[in-house]
Image (cartoon, rainbow, N blue to C red):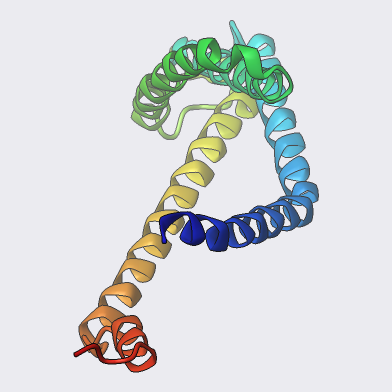
Length: 190
């Protein structure tokens, strides 16, 4: 009976793979647009960081933060693309990606400290020690503010989804419908 079960499962597996392929095809344009926006954001961050290297004496690390975050963002996107195209490198790039994401999280935390610590710097270049270029500071501030806002939205969405699942589970009937259907269709043996 087992081989017959495997034969019955094969069309279901093929159907699931076909559905997955259709979903991938439909989502591909959105993924590409998101990737392009992410690459542009990383590139702009990197360029503003380099441009503002000596333009923020109130906290010299803010331009450095932008350079590192932009560089890691660009590198991670390139590695993701390479990993998808060259499956052989999949194992090697996973370790590199893990290290990059760890460094990115550390720099996000440090960057948050550096940026929010000096809120609101002087944008007047004559205020030597209190000065920070408005472009550099406002970009770093907006980057972090939007990033944390997106994280909060994702967490709230996840919690709402989890709450809905728990409500469905709590209010669902515990009867096993499949077991009932099988017992109804199988003849009783004596």
